[in-house]
Each structure stands twice: as C-alpha cells, then as structure tokens.
Image (cartoon, rainbow, N blue to C red; front, side, top):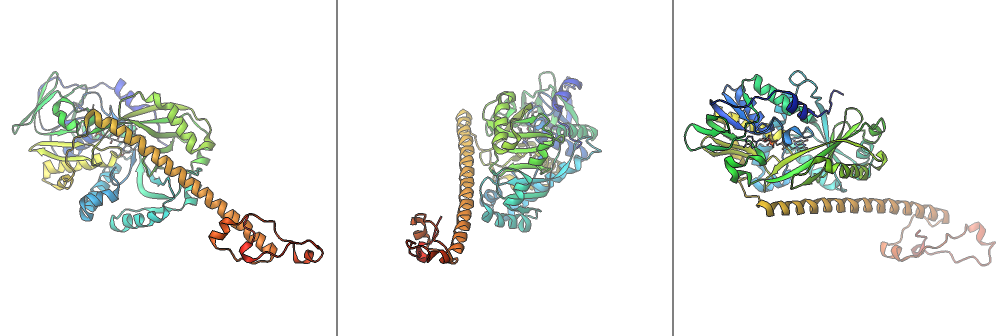
Length: 493
Ligand SMILES: Cc1cc2nc3c(=O)[nH]c(=O)nc-3n(C[C@H](O)[C@H](O)[C@H](O)COP(=O)(O)OP(=O)(O)OC[C@H]3O[C@@H](n4cnc5c(N)ncnc54)[C@H](O)[C@@H]3O)c2cc1C
C-alpha cells in the first residue's frame, strides 16, 4: 500500500519555506483561505487562464483540510431524502450530479503522477447501526436508477464477513467512491495550483476587505491586493473580513487517531479495504499502512487538543471491535468543520464579484471541489449553476448559544444512535433465541410425534414448559404415565 500517514501538514508547515505577501499586487481573483475549497478554486481558475492569488493566514491545510481522512463520496452531508424534500426531485438530482463531478475532479487530480504517494483506492462502505433492510431497497433503487450512482446493497452476513462486529447490519457499498491520503491531498492540490500559475501566500491573514468597487481591495498586515473577484474560502476562521459570514457556521471540531501497527489480526477483523462509515455519521475508519487503523469519531463545538481524545478513540474502537483488544493510539489529529443550519454548503455570489465557498461540514472533499469548479467557471465562463444553491440561504448559526445547542444535539444524536443500535442488536439476539427455541420446539414435537403444528402466539406465550411425553412404546410399560398432551399444550420450550 502506498499510503503513508506521516504527519504531512507538520512536515509541509515546518520545513518548506513559506511565501508571505510583502508587496502590493493586482490579480483577477483573490482567494482567501488555502484549504480544500480555496485551493480547488485557485486551481480551476488558474487552469482557465485567470491570474489568481491565494492568501492564507497560517499555512496550507492548516485546519480541517490538512487533517482529514480523504474519503470521497458523492452527495452532501445533508441526507438525500432531506435534500429532495427541501428543493424537489429535479433540482436535487442536478445538485447530486454536481457533487459527483466534484468527486471526479478529485480523482483526476489525485493521480500518482500528480501526487506521488497519494494512494487512491476504490470502494466505500456505509453501514447501518440498525436493522433497516426494508428501507435500504428503496434507497438503493433511487440511487441507482434516479441518481445514476452505482451502489450495491449488502446483506447483514456480507457486512459481517467484511467487518467482524455485531454492531453493523446492512450496508450500502459504493464501488466508485474512493479514498486518498487526505492530508497529502491538500498539499498536492497546492502544488497543482502553483503549477497552473496561481500564487499562494502563507502567513498572510486578510484583515479587511473593501468589496464596494469594481476593483476590490484586500488588506493584509504588510501588503494590499486589488482584484476583480474575491472568494471567501476561510471556513469558520474567516473572522474580520466578513464576520457575519463566519457567524452563519456552527464550528464542529472533529478528531481522529491512528493506531500503532496491529499486525495481521486487523485484516482478519476488518477485511474491507476501503473506508467505512456508519449511517449516523458517528464513526468513520479504514485500515492504513497495511495494519494500522485510522479512526474518526469524537466531535466537540469548542477547540481542544486532539491528543485529549486518544482515550475515547481507543474505547470506541474497542466497543465496535472488541476482538482487536486494547489498541495503542500512536497519533491524533483533528480540525474544525463549518456546519450550516440547513446542512448544505454555502456556494455562490453574495454581491457582484464577492463569492463564498464554505460550510462543507464533514463531507468536504467532493463538495469543495465542486464549489471550486462552479465558482471558477462562473467567473470565467458565466456558468450560473451555483444558483442551484440559492435555496440554502445564509442563516445565523446561533453564536455561543448555537454552539451549546449544537453540542447537546450532537450528544443527543450520538446517544440516540447508540440506543437505536443497542435496541437493534437486542432484537437481533431475541430473534436468534426465538429461532433456536422454535427449532428445539420442532425437535421436541417431532420426538413426541405431535407434528409441526404450532399453538397460536397468545397461547404459546402463556404456556409453561412441560417435559416431553414419553415415546408411545414406553407408555404402556408405565402405569403412571401422563395423559398425552393436546396440540394446544405442546411443549413450548
Ligand atoms: C477529522 C476530520 C476528518 C474529515 N474527513 C473527511 C473525509 O474523509 N472526507 C470528506 O469529504 N471530508 C472530510 N472532512 C471534512 C473536510 O475536511 C472539510 O469539509 C474541508 O476540509 C473544509 O475545507 P475548507 O477549505 O472549507 O476549510 P478549511 O480547511 O478550514 O480551510 C480554510 C482556510 O482558510 C484560512 N483562513 C481563514 N480566514 C482567513 C483569513 N482571514 N485570512 C487568510 N486565511 C484565512 C484558514 O487558515 C484555513 O487554512 C473531515 C474533517 C475532519 C476535521
């Protein structure tokens, strides 16, 4: 496996000389933020011939973009059913198609030639925490037929062959979804953008913008820039340039860890090669470097050091895969995602020449790529498909109260997911016990010669266990033999 999960962002941040903007500059497009969104826009716009300057306050991939798992799926963080309900079937279909184009943009960029060691591999499995096989069929049908997305439904047995745990039931397999080394991708994207002619300045925070004229002004601590278009791709950290915009995002920090090498047993217990995520958005993991497990799970609405979560990641792994035993977490990382109130990204033109690309939540790989393509093409070609996002307005995320509420909702939805999972597993165990009991019942009836007739459920549940009657041959020999049981009182245990 070519994937290696060394701490890329630190290497890149620490040892590469960073260019800081220290002179005044003119450009067609100024992008604020060198995360996945900003760099995708810069790459596409530079490829289309624009002069582009990217201003990054810290370093490339400093936040979520340089600390993510690299799973690339079609769609959005908002579930498809909710998207259809919100904007209707046809528009949902168009947005879904755009999201797939975003994924293809990532695939095309992430070749070994463009990004050595990027380790692209196909196949992502979404597993259900509850036994929801009946709902699965209509979803599969819709994805395959109406949304032109290749998916396979996996029965419980198949899921459990691939993942040795009773936590998961059915699965949806996306053969065309894929994964890359997420932390390398953002640096590869920066290298491609530079190659296409974009200029990237790090340690260059934008402190204010004046977006009123045709040529807009951007102010940094040591230089000014003028541009016809400004793209705000600063996610939750945008701050001063347009504080009201940052306030439409609920910051959610997500944390991940990578275990020390686990040896061959990890492949026996997790035989699936691609990324796995559960349908409640709680756990997300895959095996990397041959025998290490990369696992994302905890989240908070305040910033914390990722190391703090090593223990909870370890416990989470143990609760899902007890057979792995006590794993050691060798490395932790994390970043803040910006979540919108409606769950869809913010993509579009706020006023002439002022663009926004943020709010990608936990599904930013394909959606930020899609935003990059759409905004660059809109600026340079007049493509106005970004208007499909206009139903998703900028809604205030509630400030500090919103964060507290967000944390509570997060805790509640994780707890209810855990409760639903426990209930589903309890029901499954009860069903297995029922089946075993019925098998014993059939066997006892067969032995008693009473045939396979079964009492009605209300009677069966009230019947107390009775010993099986003796064989007819033995009966005559026993003066005190019990009366033969009537069919309604056959042995129920
Ligand atoms: C642990 C984790 C795992 C994840 N895994 C996946 C995954 O597998 N697949 C997936 O699709 N998504 C995943 N995500 C989500 C994805 O990482 C994000 O949606 C995406 O990175 C957001 O990109 P962005 O460019 O909008 O924001 P950011 O990464 O936050 O980039 C914004 C940049 O703008 C800069 N900036 C802000 N304000 C200013 C300013 N005023 N001046 C200059 N610069 C500024 C910041 O310094 C920052 O570098 C994951 C996220 C986390 C945290």
